[in-house]
Image (cartoon, rainbow, N blue to C red):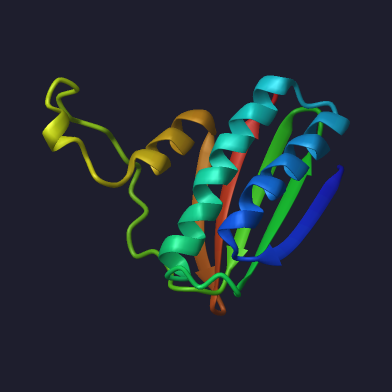
Length: 138
């Protein structure tokens, strides 16, 4: 099973590069382009959330991304040591799209991720937050 680990500083300016590197790795290991595009969206949202919420904007902390892929499964793990989430309920977007003034202020990113991936997990172990995303490839 091909695996790639990327460790980087929690800098917003690095996120696009990490997403591009991940997409390239997936393509080199047989993932269709639509999978790479879905991963790009999910990583962009997840990594920015780590910086914003877990690290409170501190752009000098460490984030680790682990990507595992085989013919049938994709696993992404984002590991940080910031503030852990206390709520990881499956989000739903229940709002009136014609009422722009009352659109939800948060949760849209996690909702999108939950729609693009097959399974999400979030745990905290020994001060490390681990957000895992899984996708069936066949």
